[in-house]
Structures are given as C-alpha cells and as structure tokens.
Image 1 (cartoon, rainbow, N blue to C red):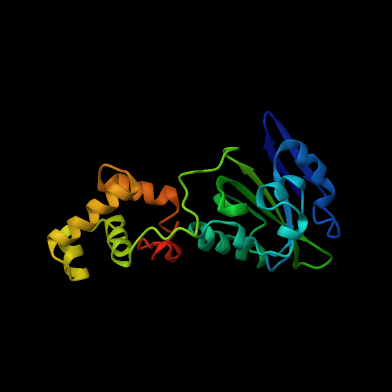
Image 2 (image 1 turned 30 degrees about the horizontal axis):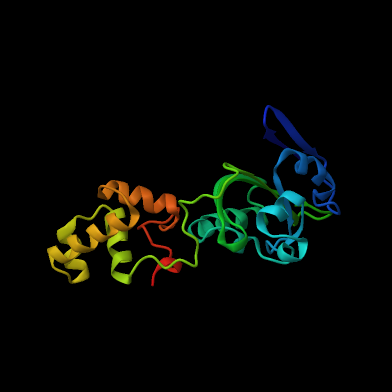
Length: 227
C-alpha cells in the first residue's frame, strides 16, 4: 500500500507497510513534516504515535496511548467519523480523508484534515489503522466550543435545531408549545449568545462551533452542550 500526503510543496510517501510496523517505523519523517501520525488497533485504541501527535493530544505517550481515538475528536464530528472508521475495519474501503475538529489537552480545540488507511496483516483482516492529521491552523481554534461548556438551555437547543431544519417561528411555537413571542425571545437570545445578526448566520455559526452535529438530519445539537 502506498500513501502520499502533501507536505508543503513536497510529498511524503509511505510504501509497503509491514503489519508489525503499523507504519510507525516511518514516524521520523512525519515529525519533520509537522504531521500528526498514530497507529490504531481495530478497536481504534491508540497504540503508537509520533512526537507531533503527542504534542497535540498530550505531553507523553502515557497521556495518549491506550485512549480511544473517538475521545480525541470533537463530539460534533464523532458520529460521521466513526461510520467511516467502521467501513475501514470491515474492509469496505481502504482509506478515507475527512475534515475534523480535534480536542487536545485542557480542551484546546483545533481543526485539520485527517487521512486514515487500513493496514492488513497476514490475513485479509485489518491489523491496524494508520492515521495522519495536518492542522489547518497552528493556533487554537477559538471558535470551537469544547465539551465542558454548557452554553444552551434545553429549549434553546430545540429552537436551534428547528431553525437549522428551516422551520419558521409559528411551526416552532406550535411544536414546542410556546407563544410566537416566546420563540422570538429565545431566538434573540441565541443571536446574542453566538454573536450573529440573523438566523442564517446563527446556523452557520453553530456548525462552525461544533454545537450542531455534522452529517445528521434532521439537525441535532450535541447534547454535551446542553445544560
């Protein structure tokens, strides 16, 4: 198997990965490129990683190895990302690339591009998964709300979901047993809380902050953010 990953103007190529290596023998190349690299077992538990991965997700191998990769990504992207990993483990595809929001030490969030590839052993079964991540910004993504911040009430969450689904005030009021004025009151509060001028910007901002789940319909607020 060959994986080519852009690194500035050059390409880094991993070829002929051996099952025993799980791609980790090439980690020094990725340390130099600024890419995060990790080897996961089929349950998505981190087995090995390079120094850049440790820097992003913890201070040492003890902080990272043994953790499930699901716990290292933002709740808003967990569901669609796990579906793609499942297809890798089941042998339905060999690799995928996806935009992700990851969560590092002390809930620092950062966005980037993830590439995952299945590595087979002596049998057709997947022996390991090689994960490569490139951050889109060296700084913390201040717009992403991490899971410890409860920013929405239950009614705010339901109204935000309705707006994201395209519902207007009257249908929302009927569904949530509120008056029209009550819905408008909560919408105004949401606009102020997310610092946006209108409903369209509210939905866009909620997705960019990770408050709304990615890849689900009807829209659903990540419950971690509901008080």
